[in-house]
Length: 294
Image (cartoon, helix red, strand yellow):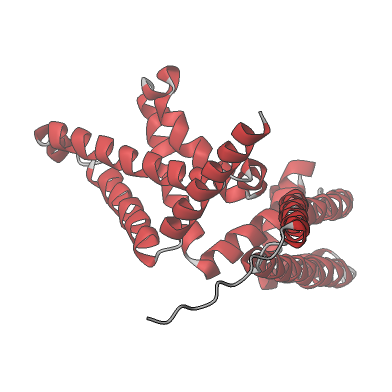
């Protein structure tokens, strides 16, 4: 039983080694990127109804060929982790690729044209896998989501407070912009981009000179402080994504189980050699035959 297990493990290692050599070749990534580019062009071409109706069979055939290429690619990447299958699922890109590609084979999804086109559109995002800088940016966007959510909550609170204050102060004199909470929030949201700030300040000065303090504090908090905080969150996420990408490129640490198995094999081979040496000592030396002269 142990011999069969060792043979199966050896076959998996050989398969993973050969598949890994194949997936690490430059032409493998080039073919995948070209397939993604053709898939994107194909999606754009299908938006022209006349062309799509005229070349419907050829376009369908090309779509099936691309699906075959993507399926073969993900199978080869999975085979590269045949010795350690868990490592395949530790990479989020592998999970994303597998979901996008294999979803096309589900009957209830493949029959829905809209969903199928969205899945084909998702394949374009896979370009980030083969372009290091784009991959870092996409990873940074994902890592910045928690910080962006916190920024959104703080911004919403700030907008609500100033909208209520603006409604209480300017609702009677300027009902067009501050007549309700919604109008006030919309006005302040536009002012967050500094668009129309001069007109808003001039209109506020006609109501009360204290409006300058209102607009100045709001612009300082919303357009400068919060925006800079968001930029800081993005930069921090970008640095984390770069470090994570470098860690993935670094050589993986040896598997403890595989290393222990190798030590056991070396110890067993050493014990066999010692047994052979002991047997050689017990074998009597053969006397040399004297040479005969003619």
